[in-house]
Image (cartoon, rainbow over all chains, first blue to last red; front, top):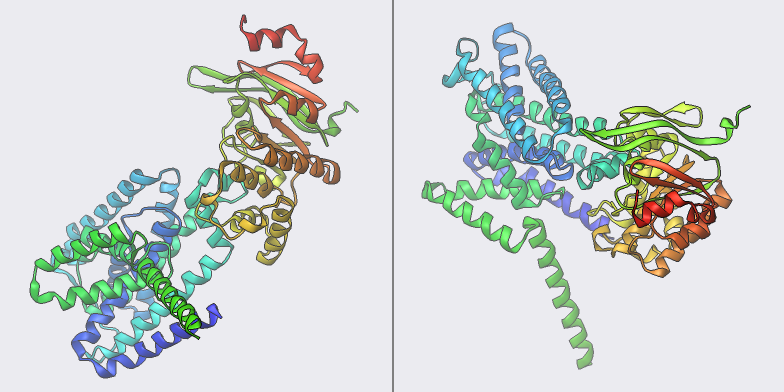
Length: 320
Length: 244
């Protein structure tokens, strides 16, 4: 019954997402499309940082790499769009393999520092190699569709979000999910129980990074102008905030966090910098009272409603 | 034939140094297939270090370790586990955010069993260990004794298990749980022929469980034999009461 309810809710949400663009302006379609990009990024980081306990600070950098690799392949080499996106994805997979191997023996703050350093190296390289990459002026990235209307991009990123959710759900429900969670809980015990922690830690690095790379490539071809700003530390911090606010180590949490916070930030756009204060206050409140994020809030609210219903039902039995 | 064919575990002059400290000092030890061997010694004698060397958590400085005819010194812990050597830890190491049932399934899945096979076997073992009612609880909610019990039965999910190295399995557990652990060891040894190497300070329990005991002191084996023999060994008496 629970499974049926879950799939019913998911189907309803998908239906709403499919129909929504017909009831909102192009501006809000754009906002939601960008929110989908961040939802995919958050879901990917949740697998690495949440489920596997690898607190990486270079996840957004792989989106940056994917975007630049794709754009440069098309612009400089004149190759088709699909080759650009493929090359962006492959490059991120290769780099994340290397980084994953380097990070095998480190964890916690040291892992965070190494990944942050990697992110800074990449971002600085892009800025310095401006004759090739455009530097801080940015690089034109060919649009994916001929139309400038946001609707095709909305459905593309909705589709990518659904695919990302399914992929991560399949992985976490499989034996791989057991290995990743065991590694996060106690890597030494996991090895003693026969888990090849080397293989699965590298996998945990590569899968989200590849996802970030392909998403970044598509994103670059959506916004049309890419710059090193995409890989700034603020971007990484926002992704982590989305995961934590939504609910770390839950499957819906990162999606919920990304979409709700992105929506809120747009809603508060007129408040300029004060919206950052408001966002910070929300983070503090959620962390203080709902450590598991919005998913915990919803769980508790659901439990409160069920309890209220049970009490009412019991009371009405007494009246009879 | 030199009798080696019956030895499931053989340590040859094993040494482990931590900088200037020699924690294991030229240990040679042979455990026969199907044996329940005790390993005792005062605190700091190197028992846990020896277990960590056997199971690949530490690398040996000198010497060799064989599992049957296979040299295992230098292999990774997960490879050693896949060969059939598993261990427990002195302080129970369970996957705290996973349920009891999920904890049980990890070693089976890593050996290639399907999720359904792993789940079925896990439920059987949990029933044997009287932990069924806790199967859907997160492991962090277990008491210390229950965590130790979970840690112990979890190992039996590995169908290839041949040698089970236990580090202080009775430490700090209630008599009822100790009874379950003893029952489990005896059943698995008699029915499945699993060899046990058990580190413990509980002399009475070791005496009842282990026909042969090895004594470790300051990183070296100083005596081996029945509990009665080693209890009368002057070297062992000196080691426990001081004087060496």
